[in-house]
Length: 203
View 1: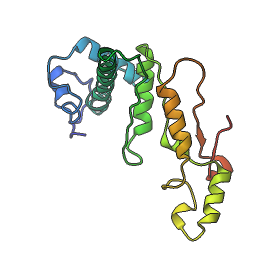
View 2: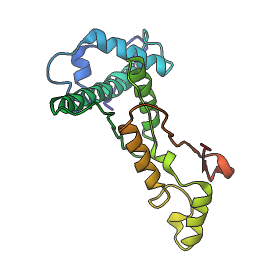
View 3: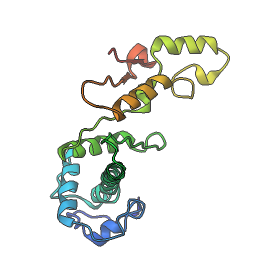
View 4: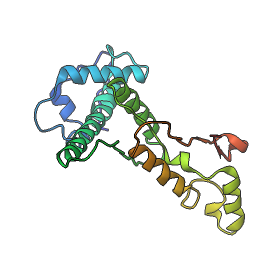
């Protein structure tokens, strides 16, 4: 994120300032004008989701929302619209859109996606989030892998390649993308189970 000036007062968000953010160009915010009323409304929803006062954002809080979360949100909405238009033009039925986010550990992926999910739902979208962590092997299966490859330290616990249930992930994503109604089982992982070794939540 860009360096910010210390401030003890509410930060004033402007269209030009939003465009100065490091994500703006990649999110396609440099072309055309921004609907500032809509941006402020969305930013307010995001602030509330983060338990911040949208009427009194400090600069660092405004940077987080308007230079990061809002551009990503607008990019997501554009992907949904563009992919939907392509399918409509081709005479294909509507289909869910799967969008993946990848970043190093501890960069805030979970918080970002929580905010995006909440705002998308508020805007009338059906949303399901799935973390790659949710696809870890069950505790029993991980123990079997650890035993089979007992000389490989990378497979003695979850996290590395070989400790995820890839078929489960493929099956779940396919069911979500091709959803036509009815329930879809989405796996969730409990990292605190078995003394921190973890296990998948029961169905």
